[in-house]
Length: 285
Image (cartoon, one colour):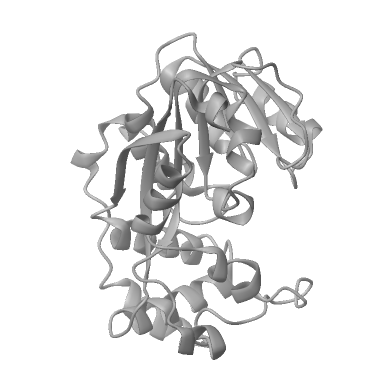
């Protein structure tokens, strides 16, 4: 932590950007458009990989679960011409509705602010797909949550989660004495938030998530993979944050995490999992 600007710039000069040839969907998008207002890693790079897994069709209805500040909802509506229901606990529906109108998708995206673990105001089988980016680990790793959520997904519909992920599970020793790069408090005014307890302890490996979904008996996992270019996606995000003075604290801690992760386990990465609702899923639940 507390690198000087010169030290940060020296590190950033070694970073590589994601290969644009891997993301033709983002042709014409600026780096600001790719990373702005996203919570967690990945930006639109991760969203693109998730949408490929979902294989949406125009006119379908999608739940954007834990939509954050709504950038993923805008992208869903524009990229695949679908109807989006955007749900988030922390972002007000008024803010989201204004953003959707300003970005030209107000006729296709509606918002609600609520806790996803509470009864949802949607009909059974309402959604063709559920998209969940950088939030499922906070509330979804509970066997009771899947039947609660899946009753709103049509039979055979897909759920896709994409998020930050760990390359290995924390060892018992690390759980008792967490690596400092994952165990820290946020700067003011959120100095009461311990990131290990609030976030990293809830992250797992792609294999852990695959087994979690498959063991539910409610979903058939179709794809589960770590992004091969996750490090360059993170590096480009850190460069964006530094050059735009978005989150100086995150820049410093990410650089520490990069250094630590090159020599230790676990390191941060990104992954995508998509699963299809079993035809007899709700009978099983």
